[in-house]
Image (tube, rainbow, N blue to C red):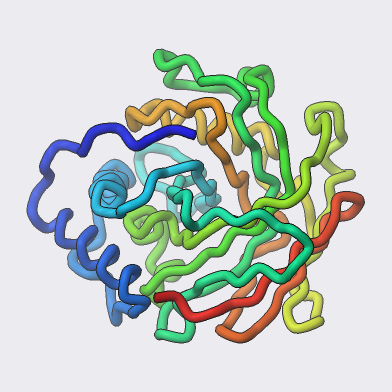
Length: 275
């Protein structure tokens, strides 16, 4: 897994304060009543906030979640997706038991679960390649697993405020559950990769790999490109959660979710209070 690069250049004090308040709220399991400062003007600035927050977080990055940006919410960069870090102590293996996932909903924050197809790089990405096509991404070897993203933030309105707020707070991520492998994923037809999410026994979302705009390879290519452009080229062992495969499903403390991946197994989890 890759370690974080050196700390970013010191930005204006306001960006550092945004990062500090998000990190502080996460550490205490608390909530924020509003975005802590002025929302960044663009994704580049939002990633500067994220980099500062990563440098303040006492853990190493082992992967990245990919989230989709609706066309009407994109900035001048043209990015149709965003990244958020996954940390080593917020990575859990699904063993068949119910995995307890820490969320901020009980403290007034946001919490949801997302079915994910998770790639793990089997080789370093070339450090000098800043742009990747889906075809180039497929050629960089990776294993694929089923998984569940814990999408949670101390800021209840984070998704309402949009991608600039989401990027600023770790991409609205608070963990990743890694399940069994999907062997030889590049040989499979994506429509055959199906998933369903249940919360408290009720089906709340269905879908699969085809729900991801452009498919798995487009998400892989974006993660490689944006990471390299940020000065964080991906390394062997890094994980990429490619995007929600059944939707974004709100969950509250005490509720249990079961995410079923047709032919590859189920992952069960229960939301507990973060902190």
